[in-house]
Image 1 (cartoon, rainbow, N blue to C red):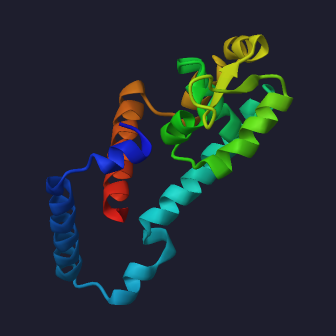
Image 2 (image 1 turned 60 degrees about the horizontal axis):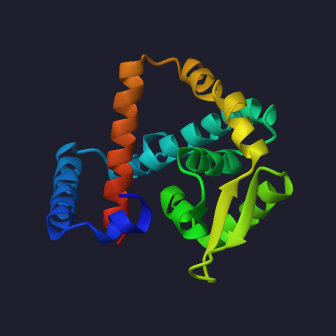
Length: 180
């Protein structure tokens, strides 16, 4: 379950496991007998490893997506719409972990580029339905080379990529549960 729906679905067992993992981490940290200052070194921070990897990944995508006329966040929206057209702004936001205040300007730019259309739902005027235009659908063919090119850039085997993807997804779920 993506986004807020998944976080609401977390049960008490997961939260208890997170508390236990936190306690185990503290015990392991104490067991290393390293000075407390060593825990505050930049290169030892998981957050920095994720942040710097994200920066590097975004540079790769920026180069590849320039040919498509998309930014990385726009590409993510297009991926969601290519999976299932005519979605509400809320559905897209939940899938991408973005709120509507972040998503709305992005969708307006995609509409101005002629890739999507926005229309009020006939059944609920409060909801806006985002649909691909013929130009947005055609862009999918051009974008099909992007994942393969990214795969070449990361220089991992398909098995390594699948394992890394699974580990990152699990990390995201744990962090979301911990943050709630």
